[in-house]
Length: 265
Image (cartoon, helix red, strand yellow):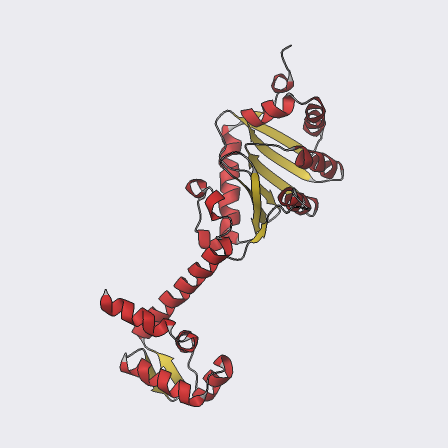
């Protein structure tokens, strides 16, 4: 492992090394092209290329410097590590609330996601972000353990304006809404809409996920149920996961019934 760490340190000591190796792994480059792409001086490039040639990572050809098979292997690993670290840095502030056991995709897919957190002046900013995505969409699918007041009101109005809604909620979420007179009335209004379908699943739903057209949003809460962030992305792999998970819950659920909204006195 000492030799491995030594090579990692060699690459980490200079950003230019990683940049040069990645460039020549993608296509042959001459020194002028490498200088233009990296901003490195010719003396610096000379040292980098000599070091790479000694390691058999690159070789000079008529078309320019190009990576060898082992050079491409190192470049691929370097790119993967760089992307993983970039994603971790991006998610670090909210990582403790990510429901990682329930996510069926690589967290790196959230490396460029939009993260919205509450502020002192906008405590409901995460909910507002989700509503913004809903209002801009034509079709919305939700699976969740909760249906909060702001989102419910927004969905009712959005469906009335022509949106198509397909929601799957835990029985506990529906029960919570049913016990609030105002919210119960809104849910009944939504249930009666031609372009809205609501289903109920008896099992717990560990996530709160909205698929607004091709954008997926996750609401993150802490162990006490306090809302901490919303994360949204249009990454295709995340969309496939969310669409599939919604479909599974949908098939396991039953239609919302009037008895679900009836409160025993």
